[in-house]
Length: 200
Image (cartoon, rainbow, N blue to C red; front, side, top):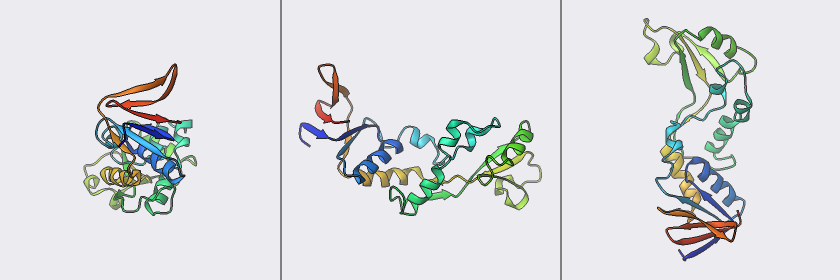
């Protein structure tokens, strides 16, 4: 790479969010550079366990908040991308499960039951019993209630690998990342001494 790089958009952080944004911008014709000081997807992306949340977990206090409603559409968007016909083509990414489960030991089970049965989350959460329970919870001594959340679980390494493929030559590793200023205006970054100038 040249010692000075010019790009339309400079993205800091190569987790799922940064790589997804990068792929969308490139698909729209923008030039991009993604700068990462550690491992691709090594932060919050790996800690998410691959669960594509649709907001139900944020509604456990019995009311849908702005945050829970804002991400309610995420599972649909991911399903489309995984099928290869969404805003990105993530076909080939491994899906570990079509749903995940929430177990309540009983202390708040009554509140959860009434809330999860409400119109607010109908179709997104179902109580499961008997043979529908995951095998690990089918023991007769198991107590509590189990809910199936219609939210995907994906294999995070395969997501990162696919998004990195979509990044093309726009990934840049750097240990020392500093702001690049023109007077008082931030115009980019210095990455290990190399200047990256960006419009955004």
